[in-house]
Image (cartoon, rainbow, N blue to C red; front, side, top):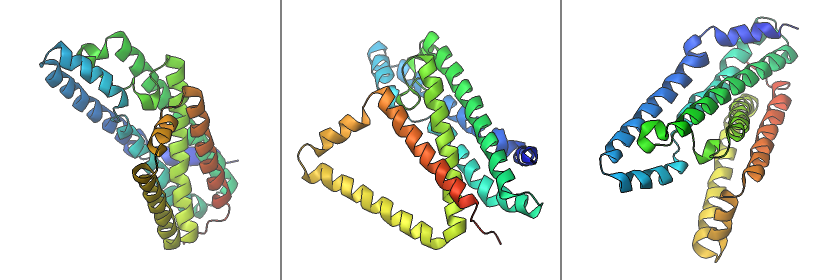
Length: 238
């Protein structure tokens, strides 16, 4: 098996491999620190309100953007290259799986360390939340490690699955998936506006416990990985 070739291929462009995600993460952190300085100058009451509200701060998604892009690039750029160099689809799939697992481990450990430092220093001395947020778990560090690992792995496989589906079905996939997402969003909006209790039920789902959320994230990741594995065996490249 030449899976190592796939790993080396993904590490040639170092900025794409780990430069852009770290730069995006650092930039978002600087912005949140600046917000902490500004709000902190308004007094303890404003600072306390900021600390509570920032548990839903989504700045951590600055990392997920480049990572889903990494999933796009893996199938859109490296997959055709790997086949052109004579690697089999099985070798590419096993190598890419290892690349994604490695990324999920490294970034989940990094975020867990950041969360531990942030909590220990009361938000880096500014009462801000960047790592210690709902999306990466406000619970114990091990919960952050598990949640972030599952989230990042799911995002990577989702990006790869979307690109594989586009390569397999072309523009039809984009139009069909866009229509489905639009109808889903419209249905949720209609439910919130027109049905009594729908909004409360939706809020209950979004605020369910840590365990159920891990199951939901794991299921989404497993579906994405499964779809990618099926498509990578059938996708044709020009």
